[in-house]
Amino acid sequence: MQGSRKPDDDTLMVRTAQGEEAAFRLLVQRWEHQVQAFLLHMLRSVEEAEDLTQETFIRVYGQADRFRVEGRFQSWLFRIAGNLARSRLRRRKILSWIRFDPGTHDVADRGPGPIENLERADNAEAVRLALAELPQRQRQALVLHRFQGLSYKEIADSMETTLPGVESLIQRAMAGLRNELAGKVEGS
Image 1 (cartoon, rainbow, N blue to C red):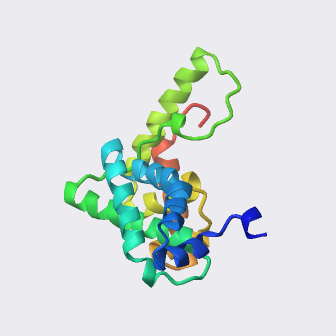
Image 2 (cartoon, rainbow, N blue to C red):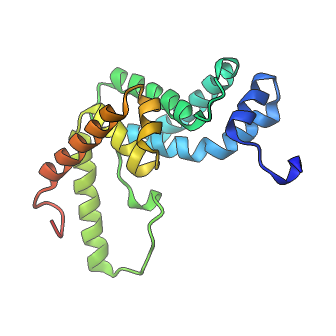
Image 3 (tube, rainbow, N blue to C red):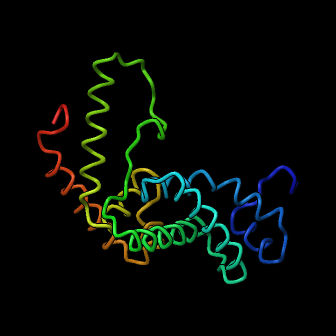
């Protein structure tokens, strides 16, 4: 029966802490692309996103024995990745975190024509620039929610804040985006 069910992330972390490299490899396979996409949004650099993805998993492996089994692996993983990204950004002293590239997201393609594609590219650029103007914590909360699909609770765990804190960050981020994009995006 064990063979028919995939082990959950907490179980894999326990096995990783016990030195089982196959369990760690499975965690990396499950999460590598999501972590890298998150870091790409944060850093706007493929090379840095790849480097910090590796660093994230090095830290996961190194801290496996300290992981608390509570069903919060995803939040813990993105907290590590987010902390690494913020450290890198502080060193670079760059405010612009997010590269909005519609091609990196699962968007249903209904075959838009060239005009729609141009409008979409213009809108994506406007959104990317507006996101870059948001304060770092607001951007991080918004990216984790909108692009990574984390719940407010998972974001609160990841950012080490409260649920009301996350709600406030996302509300302020959305208000900031609305203000910045007013009249710039088609259909606004």
